[in-house]
Each structure stands twice: as structure tokens, then as C-alpha cells.
Length: 163
Image 1 (cartoon, rainbow, N blue to C red):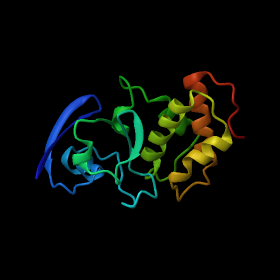
Image 2: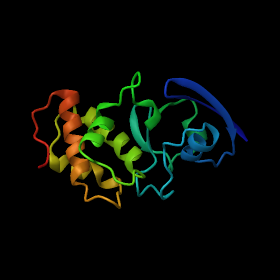
Image 3: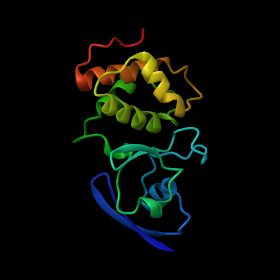
């Protein structure tokens, strides 16, 4: 057993776990933050995306002990003072979700994408960057619209959302 201490959503949190515990299971089972979903355990679906030290990662591909000392942001940590994050609000406004299972990973991927591209996003780039996230309900059209809308909201970008 190892004691793992992380800063999660701005709070220092610790728990013991087996050395082989995946970060996604540590977050869900040890810390009780169930917004991060377990989809495939093989890094293919993206339902488990969190931000670790400022970068999006698939938490099913990282051991909790590897993340010790890191700063992790989960879907529960991106809203501010009761207000949805602009990406969350855009997913709601543009109907970028159906069953909601992939939504936390999609939102976390989108936040990272928008931050990395500094507002310089177009439909092709968004579609390319979402390739590591699987949604079995939608045709991605509204997800792409939501990401482009949030990009405009966050950066005042003049890119036009997918029609």
C-alpha cells in the first residue's frame, strides 16, 4: 500500500491505495469524485480525462502513485463560484450531450484544447483533437459547435461555429 497525496480541485487530498491503482479509480473510489468516468481502461474512449499539472491526461493510463504530488483538476473542479465553466455552459446551450457518459471527458479535453490553442480553433482542428474521445450517442456535430462557441466566449475568437 502506498499513501498518495494530490492537490485535487484546489484541495490537498490523501489516501492509501495499492501500487497498481489507476488514477481514475483513486479519484473515484478513494476521493469520492465520481464525475470522472471509467469507460474502457485502455485509453481509447476519453471518458476519464482530467487535467494533471495543467495538461489533459487519460487517468486510466496513469497510476495514482505516478501522480503523487501533482495538481489534478476533475470535472467537479472547473466551475467557479457556482457558475458553469464556459465549456460546460456551451455544451448545455448547444446540446453537446445526450446520455452524458462521455461529457466529463469531452469537456475536460475541450478546456485543454481551447487553452492550448489560445482561441485559434476551427472546426477541423476541433474534430482532429476530439479523435481520442468517443461518443456513442451523437454525431459530434453539436459537440464541435459547443467547443467553438466556448472558444469564442473564452477568447473572443471570431471563428464561426459549425452550422
